Image 1 (cartoon, rainbow, N blue to C red):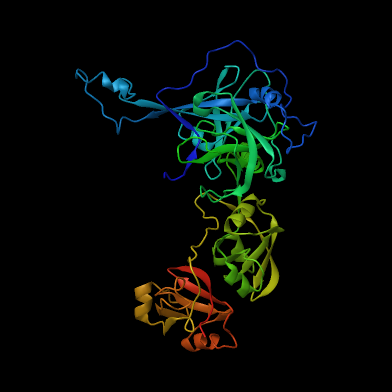
Image 2 (spheres, rainbow, N blue to C red; image 1 turned 180 degrees about the horizontal axis):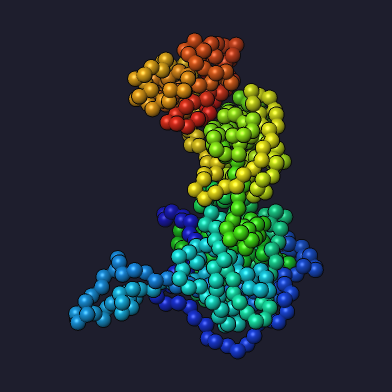
Length: 487
């Protein structure tokens, strides 16, 4: 059986670019949006036909063609006068030895003055970008800006007349089961319409730190990249960007960037030339049920701060490593990726309240959010072990940290705790603690010596059947595990 693959949807055209026959037909003169902002249609009731909706929206959806000059490297080039010289053209080379590559994708207009939204991967590295309308009219596009993190790109075309355009929907209101319609340029055929429903929300397909896709079973294929996913009001609910398929074609697993995210990112690109994202200045780790129990909460929701950037916004506030973040700016934090998204979307320089748990007590810390510059890491997921718990009752041999251990395991001088020298394969720490780990806290109590560690493992402090929260320093990183002492 072939494995499913995540595919971006831009179609590669090689040296053959889609061209449109010049026509004298002009586009609609009105600057009114083609989206239906007057009558609100039941999104859960399938219409008798999508024909009226398709006819109304088609003028605002465009085909994107790009070309790129590739240096004469990688492909064979036969010398002038050689009997094989004629094959140079077969490999797409021009007389100077260069070759041209192109790609095909989709896009849509969101303003009468020619702002076009598409995917970054559709136009990435392109030397020339053209926008082809359903009428056949072709306009050269200027790149306004891109955001590789969310795969959004903004183009600008110029026309003497107002151009047909559509509006964004509020994607937060979209529900699983709502009807949607996709229009795009699959495989370069252009002007193709497909319909289906929203199959799922908030999908993480591991394509980036801000994954939050709308999943749809509406047929989308290569070339649909950057095209709109409409609701029944004719508003853009998402931008089609990827599929999962064992064959390369649609199998009913398509993914669209939510319109609210696209609207925010594209607006910032138009205003600043780039996206602007909030910056917390911490690294975090997700939690499991054992860690939730250790912090005294019912569900494994939230993230633990594992390090604080000394130059970041959080450093000037009362945050500590080990704080469990529950809410950020009034929004519940479900997991690491959820925090990444809410921080990125928060207004820069805004005073933000963060609800945390520290030492099993709830409190609120306020700070001013900063701006994430390129090259600065947002919160990343720390690797969690795949199986269970830890200790001696942990099932781990503990030692004092000497100079030899500091050299061998790269333990900084300012790190205090006890060294894990070995872990029993049958003990509760197996799969979590590792040789060379430094245990710095147990059950929220700081560990500076073996006496501290053994005291923290006394039955009254670490009873059987209850997870013990263990804070570990490993290879320069802080990590948290829960271990159920073996009594």
